[in-house]
Image (tube, rainbow, N blue to C red; front, side):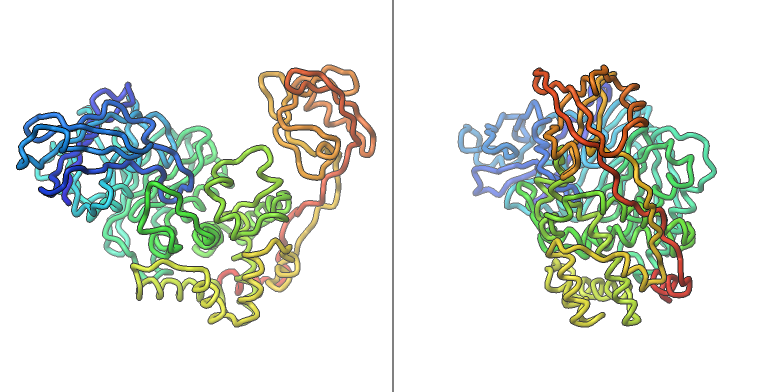
Length: 574
């Protein structure tokens, strides 16, 4: 089936995009069912993008109205049988408005300054109809000077912005940035790479373009070449933003510009770039079998997101270290932070990596105040598990590089086929033997604790513990103005055992009125094992809760290099 799409942005301040779809049905078809995706690949949550649609209308090429009936939350049926149209009039036009006012990597955002078009939020497909070589024309205000996308430009005139894709999947997998943003680029391996930067930055001395090129060339060389003909990095810099979303030939990145001014913040940005760029191979090509072809109307539940995101979380930091953008000490500082985060999450004792992956749709992307008590992130634990696997493989003079090489070879041999867990385990067994496979399976499928300290010793790394303790209440506080609100209660901590709840307001401690400044000051005077009386408001009812103050658990102060030659061989094998 052929379709022509057109996006029209007339008044950006209204945040509206008009979508026009033109096509032709088969002569014997009486209905066509159009759908808007309910979720975006790479972001595993049903988001119901159709809630932003309004003004849906259908007509023939001659302008005669067609009946449109909504038959599901995201499915709209165009019906020829209820009209008096001539049977020969099989052409159609579908038009609707979409409200776009959320700036994330998985939504669209349009205002006076720019348009970021995340196409699953905008473009309908047709159920049970493959769409071949769809085209898309984009009309936007003449004051905007740039349009950046990985889509193939087929415009014959400079004043028309017309693009095409091989199919519907590739079309909606290509985000678009329009406005007066900064544009730059470079060539690597003879391929054009485009950089778009939207948003203000504070002065800094970092070379975003140069370092992005280094990342492309390092990962491209590591993987044996580039699997695309063009690539686009879309950067959004705005206070408080952080995140990224991978696409087949591009990525959308969001980052807080104030963080770019510090060395640690910039390292985190580089790791984000490496993470999303490496997804070009791991996820967009090497992928769990559930992640393509896509059913955009239901969850694509997979127990292998630890491969998709955990392996990528290991490699992004390794790549940045291996290419010399950070030192070994800076890399180990990142691992220290990862391990401290991991040990601080009680949910690791109840939630395996398999379960974490499978439940992404209802847990990771829908966190609440009890999430850390009941679940673990497949990003965090997945990265740690592959970090552990790399150390285990080093004892066999192998590394994670060998695992990746076999995964990539398998994809090249069967690009249409996704990966299942047993294939991953067999590859690990092929590289490291049955014992390592068994240990790895335990780490992914059970909640058995991982002895990271012993493993790191094998890699020439020593844990340096900070064994000093400080008073600990066992809950996190949030502030609403000056009011102190319990944000989350930590499993088995003092507050948890005493019955303090998330949402409770702390009114007073030992009879003293407690507001934000006083609460922060009060923490200095806590005494371990002393009992304190908390007056709280719960659902507008006052009550008192008493509990003894506990102590914090030891944390990693750092990861020291005890045998540099061993550490370098494990982390950066030649």
